[in-house]
Length: 40
Image 1 (tube, rainbow, N blue to C red):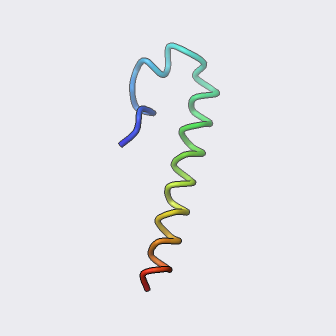
Image 2: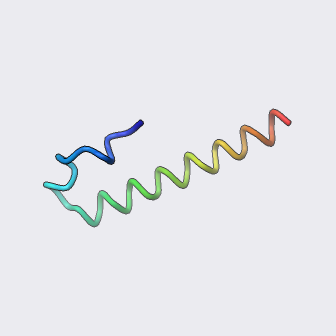
């Protein structure tokens, strides 16, 4: 899906990357919900 699960991510700033990944996942969920509402 995205690079959040890559081990190389954890070699850098783990906390920042974790937050960015969580944020991107939330955005993805919101986008999917919006798409479903638009389709329905």
